[in-house]
Length: 146
Image (cartoon, rainbow, N blue to C red; front, side, top):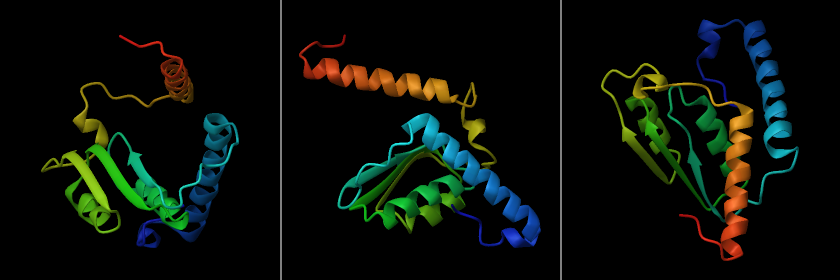
């Protein structure tokens, strides 16, 4: 879990602790819902590409980067369509490669870069994952997709 270094200037210790507990519960829920409780694959020595719909404050991405470093990933690449200049500069220092398609001059939120923004549901993520797995299995069996 990642907490901004200066969070204590804006939030009480009690509020920070409550947010931490809420986030831990959400992480556990997502692991159960999206990975079926299965562990992460082995990352040691491998190239890991972290992709997101954009980076605002960067808390989620920093947590993912820290996890990859703790698991001894060989190379960490971050690829996003949009990010703020300051957070992009900070992330550039802690990853092997950073790809950002757009860094708006007046960046406020990831949603500003999209014509139609919505939060992706767990079910939509699972549908995409199942579809990808099905396509890989079909590809191995020799059936091509047009």
